[in-house]
Length: 366
Image 1: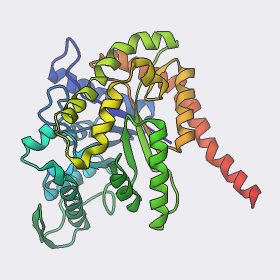
Image 2: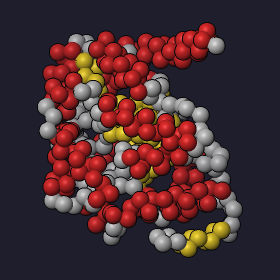
Image 3: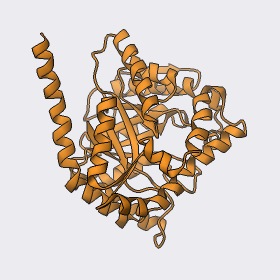
Image 4: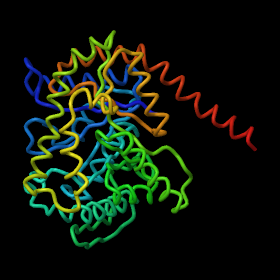
């Protein structure tokens, strides 16, 4: 299981402006690299003052020279908002700037107000997503082509410039929580991410993914990755006391999606989200923790809860949101350092030992 950071970009914490906050986030990415995290993910939001990240790709470019090893990814680039030629070329440039450390997370978008801002029909987002990705792969294939589709027109007769470092293209990840999206991801053997997914629902989705994965001839392999808000302190009581007000503020986002649903703004193809958002928003702080949606506690508590979920779900990756709800960077940094010192070594030891033990068990069975 890979260990990642989920890099939330909220309003600048008290005492900082946007200039300072962006620079502090770049420092956070560099610290994640130093501490041994393997991935750092950035989301994309538009016309959303509380989430000022209209271009995660710009943040990746800024962080490229400040890091050496960590992989930098988008979670997600919203494909219906972009022209595929421009996005494919942009990601090729990021692939070069990072020397092959960029990951391409893709999705079709969720916020009705963003679709309206871009003049897009949200009901048709899946079609636009699929066509955009098709054209992006053609651009990356570096063959001349002409494409005239329903949503995009593109003509490319020259070599891709700059050329990709990673071939045939940067690794693709997709945000997938509806059955239709999960089936599509599995048919591509593409890793899929879920935001604030309940463990039992993620387990159900993983079973569907594996069934479709097998139908298409792919070998079983971990493909699911989850995000979890996390705060580590010396004791459970200290961690809860420190993190609770920020988590409550962060959870307010599910109220915003609930309001979209109640207002009838979420189209039928987003029915899962119409049901999911109100259910999540109704949870208390204690219920959120009991259901495993957060990892807040001492190193021992956090380690145990991560291992429980990894064992139940056979996770490919867990993306930890150390900073949420307007939390100060210094507070999140202390939690990151304690996690790296007191949780990460044992977590790596146990998760790396499990496949070896399973292999020995299978060998004995034969």
